[in-house]
Length: 276
Picture 1: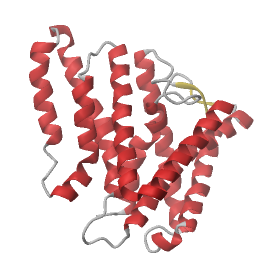
Picture 2 (picture 1 turned 90 degrees about the vertical axis):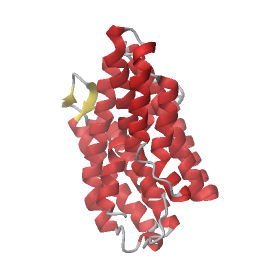
Picture 3 (picture 1 turned 180 degrees about the vertical axis):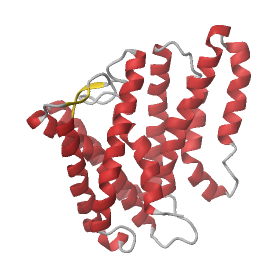
């Protein structure tokens, strides 16, 4: 537990330091790095499950797909064909580079990684990327992204602590035996409180976009989605018969163990924010 707490504090210091000193550019680099490292571990899980994905090129396409909104805003060229291009490239590769019994699995697992990781994390980049007719400042967008991360990840913290203290009723024993309904409720309540707090602290930049009351109202359903997103990662790990996606973060596991809840909450938050 001590190692987990130390890693959590260190990660938040890295996030705050990057956003403070490098603003939007630093945040985009962080999201891109998270996407590539998460995809790396996702493809390792798929390999362990016997599906033989194209990991290297998949990570390359995944990083581009995640950063596509920022790339498009900078160069003006459309980036929506990236996923279609990736599908074509990998469809060609499976014919000559995978045995017949693994071709379907190789193509499916590679493309699923691009959608589930690369495309879904793209919504954090959409939240971050300033647009010409914005009614919110670049720092305001940074705060919205930080809000999503805080609400999603503090749900994990609240659920863990509440579950350890009073957890009795198993929520999903066949997927994640340690999760309890009491922990889930504690996680959702923690997210509501954190969401309202972040909105209040950033009220100067978020005025008109995310009041503390509005934040509390939407933090609840986003926390529920974060719990579901965490369960989906557990499903994938169980299919690969592995406990953790990696060991890059002491006390927590791999990058996928860290980013799992952000994969589904990013898109939901983006649509709830009603950003252009």
